[in-house]
Length: 438
Image (cartoon, rainbow, N blue to C red):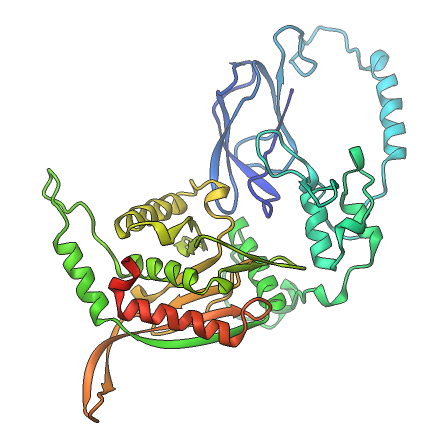
């Protein structure tokens, strides 16, 4: 049985082998860990799904394999493996037994479709049995592969009008490509080449740092997001004296454990996540994602929380945040952040979500505007708390604790008035924090 490189998410095209738990010749049984892989976002151990003998390892530690590539072979113990090592004195059967196979392979190659004119990854259409990232069934019973759905979205093609040429009538990429030409408006500018940029700095000392998988993915996704999403931004100053007082009171009341340490320690970010989740419930039209020819409106608030990593970031998703307690939010965010930094998150833990929060307040950043993480329709950027003078009702001046937030909106989903309603709901919840808890 061929062991394939699994696909860990729609946007993952390859993985790096970081460890083998078995060696060639070892017996394996279902559930035994075979190898560990690392992608730009996560790492995971891949188990065997059948019993037998590991006869061939085709990718060594440190090598990168495309999704769907055969990384190893497990032979059934009932029959000798074709790939097992043979004694040096054994006669070579290739000259007499492989000719029919070579002829058959030549016929298959002649009948195969010609390569695509654009550099698409053919492995994106491979469906692995271990993961449910395969083709989706469309209205009317048609089935389309993930790559076909992505191409159709980019070209504005209605898949219900496309006939499938794949197995059992499945719609594959070539069907979408032949349905209509790519929309030129979707093309993204690539900018200057590396050679052109380096030519500008001739005679200047510098160090070249090649992009790793994470940074390359971030560069591609954020370029696409900025070029294809019509962003607009709304900012507001929030008074947070009540929020700070509530946090201090809650932490002071935390029970002590056997070691004398408090059972929990809430951060301002925990309150922000809770308030943002409740605000999306109060303005449900903004609790949404853009899906090309439709808008998806969600019943629960799944909030992504940006976590900084060495050389990049990841956005794990806190599910059903509006229904969670502050202590539950605090514990879950800490766990997701820790496993995110160790690249131990599963794809379902950082994919999806309705909106996201990026907080740079701990770095002293006063305010900033963030790029939306598609397919989200909104992203809340949170700045640092500070003391600021404000005018009182009687014309005097007082100092308050203040925080500036900036809401990034996808204008295809959230109009200016709707974004303002959402930000106003969040402001009220932060300035009257008890209302977020009832």
